[in-house]
Length: 193
Image (cartoon, rainbow, N blue to C red):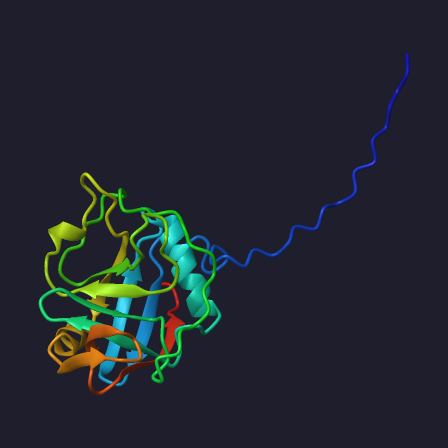
């Protein structure tokens, strides 16, 4: 009989840096978005949109939303931001994530969702608030836009944002850009309830 003894050395796990390490046991973390028009508190839904919430928290943890703007305001539709500085310089992104639009959450009034390009899995940092019930953004025959939380304080701030005057921007080559920049001064994770 041959006995074999295996020496097992303790493995040091690399610290996760994908957002999942932020309040890992909290399925509904809250973030405070401080803007030049007022503060907004959003409750995120990690149970239904874990990839999207962790991605968002990763940007918050890196302070990557600080000093960005809401660059797209469409009255009765969306207030979008998080991707550009007030000089319209694009911010760097982490890799695109899987689209969780089929999670059961819908693009209803005062929810937060992740913006994306035309491809279904092209979302990374930009987010938007729905300022209407936007059924056209929900999944159907095509992929929708992943909702990952809702406004719990400051819906009046977002409603006021949706009514600011906008114009065409040559720098962004886009319509619906606020004439007076709405700056996201700081985004922080709030302590658990």
